[in-house]
Image (cartoon, rainbow, N blue to C red; front, side, top):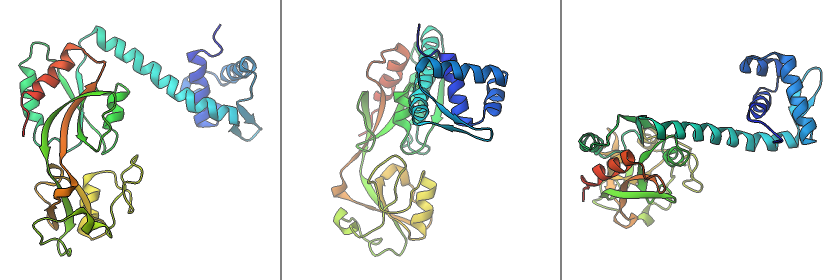
Length: 278
């Protein structure tokens, strides 16, 4: 017999997140006594105490905290496995994740070319933040993604380059370098760069989550940035973009999981590659 059933794991996670048996029972739509007995049976079977309980509070033990960390991953993996099985057997939409404004005007052409393919399905466009499109693709929330190399980690993906572009420094009007035709990275050494969620050592300034926040902070002189040209073209009012040749080129790629050879996903990648820009 398994030490822990999926149903019991869901019960445990609910209590661990709520730290209140009454709220957890309401969330699970079961009676509180039944939930309490289920948790007690789990603790007995695992031979560990998962919660410290008093008449006024519920707290996780170290064993409980460890089970919560890995239990969430297990439940997510189970959900994704079921969803992928259902999608493989049916005619579910293809889920395509992109960064808002980060398609370099490629998206409409890709969708039009894909629609001509006999394997084409409805495409659901998912918008994500600056750093989590790869997560969407890896964990199955998306079937394909538009990503930026070398910024996004392409490990485990099959990718086709669609567009190559230079990178530009995003500066406020009036900046000491704003009137230059081009600048070197070394000339920005003393500047403050923003930090992006999930990207270690990406900058020394305030954390931002999207392009709108970046523009706002650059405009008031709080930060500068070096980004692919298409992410900031045309430049918003109060912003100047100056080429940075030694920053190296940026590539927009369409990516899928290496082991995902489903016809409708492969067809999207093929359609996109047929529109490849130089």
